[in-house]
Image (cartoon, rainbow, N blue to C red):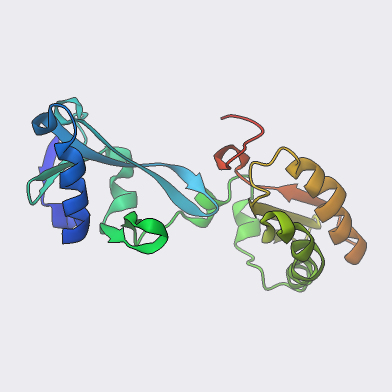
Length: 215
């Protein structure tokens, strides 16, 4: 394992460190434990994280290990570039809790698996994309907002006339989301934009609260 200066990769505010130290003190064999931080996936265009205590002796050889004012932090190699410059803070919102502030974000290709890179590169400023966004905002989102759902256009293939849509909120991971897409969203989009050939759901439903399939 490689030991590095914590400021190069990761840091904690005094308030966050106090919470971590207090939690660590309640763990068995706390003197041998480290705070592990890693990126476990991507959901709705953002990184998903896991923070937990584990024996620092179990850190892989290529993991980066830092010490932040007495707290040992382990970051697996695969997460280093994605966490560089991140900071753990304590937020008082929603009852208070730890929040990881990360200046890094997934690349468009990482955040939108299943969407061809050349389609993503076109952006959402084309005439067809603008029309699709207007339809979603005017007709679709008001109707699915009642159960906390939302649909957003993430890409438009103007050549094949295919819209790539991501569901979020109550629609992400919902067992009914396939029906919502095929009988609601796709039908509405194709009625309002007759030249549209198809709609592709690029939602990561496995990370929703009620996923209908498991990874």
